[in-house]
Image (cartoon, rainbow, N blue to C red):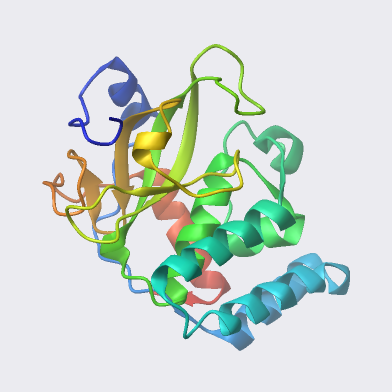
Length: 231
């Protein structure tokens, strides 16, 4: 069962860590500064892009009192329906760029990291504890999943752990429905992380590495803070 085997230190993991280094050494407590966010959004993307931001705010407000499982579903659907997949070169003119949630909303486009990051931030602001959320690097291969070739490709998804020992639920931009990890045999986890650490095991309570300095993640956190996500 995927996500139930220990993550491994392999060439692939080393390659990812070499490219991105390790995770920022801090625990993130994200809060919204709504006025600052809106100002930053409008200044950068203009009034023409405002419907996406307004819809995001409305969705956040509407899910405040919902059960966690329903929040997960609504946030996943929001981004999967409203954001179009495109690669970083097309959107940003760079080979690899991690967008903040505002940037993803403003361009209405993103790649797999951008979908996962936007869902992560949004769910934290909807009241889901950081400890229940992970960004997960996987090797993905085509089954009946659109957009993937028959060869393995690097991919990112978001995992939600209802409890430390529970099987995670996988939020993916490639498919609409949220499935337990055991129903995603097309994904092989490489490693996972959140703002609390890099995880070397499959459950929410498993050992995590010493907090580190995943450079693209650190840069993203700073840019998000500048936009109005307080840390």
